[in-house]
Image (cartoon, rainbow, N blue to C red; front, side, top):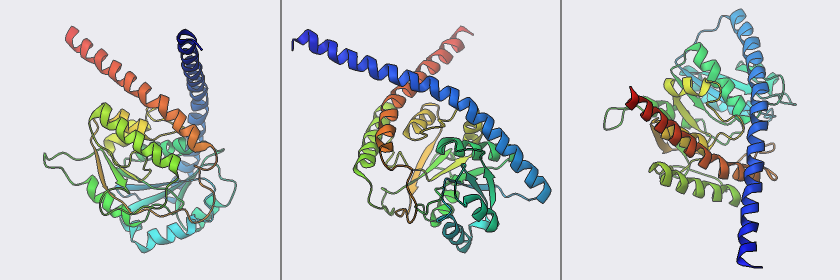
Length: 310
């Protein structure tokens, strides 16, 4: 094959990948509108239940997104209770249209639960929790998985870190629980996920100059500023909220801090990262992170140019 033919083949491949990504973005936007409507319906239904119960609130909300976690949820909620988490935080399970008894288990164990009318996806389940927290005026949110991978001991550590200023007296906007920092504990990670973690770590350091050891962690603590931003329409990736969201927040000036975290392997049920999903996730991030970087850079330049015109 000639050099010209090889160049043409490479350009064709890039064009096909770019076209596929653009199509996925358009489809994602259409689906996002449906998800937003479903989120509002679920929140309204839960609001009616709350008003009837007359519940009081703390300043910290613990969000537990769950999809078919009926087997894992009772054990996790028991551990959270034994760790005294209920004394400092309100617990909220986001049942993402589960086909098992996730919702019934949460209610049976006395935990608040918002139930989606159909399966929305992990990102939309999280945003449902953010919107709830923003409307109810919570100062802090901690999110952790419902499959038992995130140890309950992390809740107090994240809550403390959210309220501790750094050397310059500034509070963090996002606190990440990292399994890779000294003092953290992890479990065997599939090679695709481990490769993604290393690539995203390098990408973040190259794009924003900050080293994040665990850019794919789902164990996070959020400030009121971050909660309000994530609750806004279009501000949060409803499909794959991961390193792309960290990149967006760092580029927008949000302060991100990491602390060691204790994590375990999944006990029961099926992981959302099984099958071909890790490859689809890696493909999405490969386009999403550069797109986020370009978008945020252009927005910042536009804002700087507008300020100069004034």
